[in-house]
Image (cartoon, rainbow, N blue to C red; front, side, top):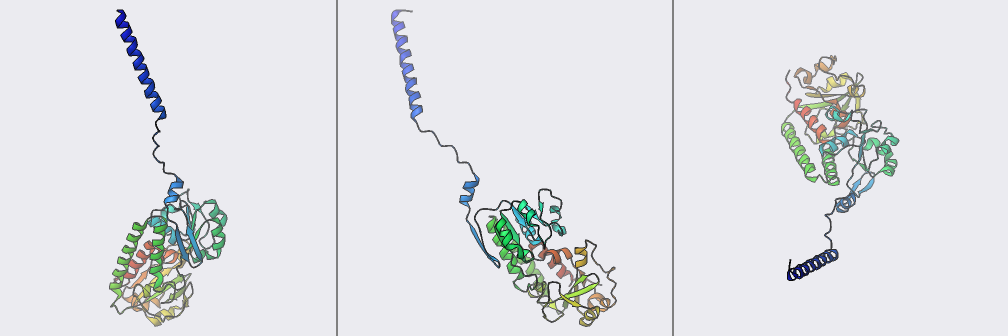
Length: 335
């Protein structure tokens, strides 16, 4: 290589090296691109709009979307199931057949009895929301110390016409809490359609109906002012008895009373089958000669209702649909 070529190559090498150094310096001085934001629990909480719930026992503020929910009433479990919300804890003593999938799930804490929750087990479920009804109301203060607690204001003693409104309002509230508004609204609309369907059937019908609770061979009746008042007030069924007051388990009646009232439709709710986990009564096993003399029996309008839907729940969407179907069948059965 000649001297000229050698000097030219050296010059070119120096220039290239200087350019690379300048690029390196510029890269070091340039601001670095920010990484994509990562969704964290904090950012999710910041985006959540707090929900304030006013209920009969007080006011509960939900600051964050609940992640672990304890439902101490089967109606509440049914609401959560409808909204596709996981259940962290629930009582497992009387689970209705339409919620049977929850019975043996090991990741769901068994919180004891429906009417007597085990507070230690509730705490062990690590809830950030607890849902209760009047059956657990006396534990409200203690439960509220574990997690925000909401009382479902359904009246199990005198449901009357507000029963359906209370159900729908509670469902919409849960939809807001869990950011499932659209799903909740769809369920409300579907329930409204089912109610209208039964009302169209009962609106101009002359038949009178009697709701009786069977308990170890004894009967109780429920009229317009009772836990099943909504059947008469909201669903349009005509009561065969006066609108007298009734307790949680109805007004005790005799077989002679049923015969004298002589209803056109009888709905039999077998409490014994629920409480003792026994097969429910049916036309073959109810050997009551006086009841068999009623118009309802003679015309095939005795309905052995779904006791789990009527007695264990009766205040949620799925249980209401079952009750509506039972009510309709009372006008359709034939001897």
